[in-house]
Length: 432
Image (cartoon, rainbow, N blue to C red):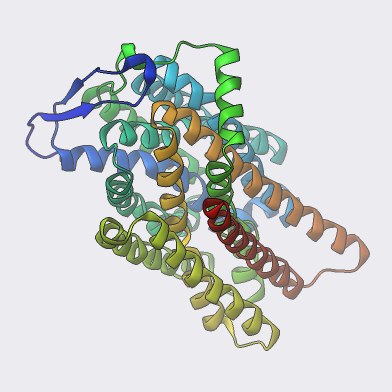
């Protein structure tokens, strides 16, 4: 139940040269906590769309009589759709407002989730997942841009986004557990019906309680030339682009795990579908702890320092994964290192996004969309590459699950090394 209504007045002022000296207030009919709660629910939709059906992936492969690598494409194509959707919705939300784009995105999301549930073959499921990803992008883009409308200070933005992420982390914490039991009691399609219902609830909350935070006077007139110009401006800003890539590679390791982790855990280590979620939940517990740490200290030490801490912990876990897999330290060791690695993802990604948006607050939607496009295009490409490597290896020799584990670990380690290298390079850029 939403907290008692009272007005939340938010000063919305941009450093946009076209609207200088504007000082508009937006009135919310709900409390600040309720606003954060609703945005947290919206941010749940993206992880729910991936994590809830992870325990069902081997079952989907069996039902459609396809290889595991083919089912993995349902995640990769979702991420590619999500990447394209951010490129689409980012400029639109800067031109037509946050609320309108969010409502359209939620409507598409509901129909796409329903399409996944009624898919008759793997190709239909993959296609529906692509559009599912496009629709999910609208929620992520709008949340970032809307929060930047409200919290203009970089560190304050990072702090409040940490609170949103704390709520949204409930989704990946519980989704695989719930998804495993839904599979046990019903079927894999029921997971997508559940996601569809969640989106309908979010739609009702948005329509009822979320106002427009981007005044018409401050919107960019929709123009393909202007959009391309904004993207070129972002690409030419070396620091902004580098921070986007840091967040992308730091997060790409998670999707390496999402692509192959269910098969490694369940096929290699014998984890039951109903128990997979409990091991996966450890990743989210660490992520919640890191988000809490970030929200407490980011105002004291700044976004850059917290990003550095996240990358350092992730680097230590990556080295631990390499050593543990090489010397076969066992399943529990693997689970702990993966949890430490994945748990730092949002600390790095959230702070890198805060830095990027601080460069361009007046085109927050476009900047957020480009960062998201880069992030999920890289994640999708890695997922497809892993699927191809599994398939190629299987045609040469019957692939064993240990090879799948090495592919997963190698990809996660490589992603972290690239993120760390980029972070070190951006510090050199700043000195010049």
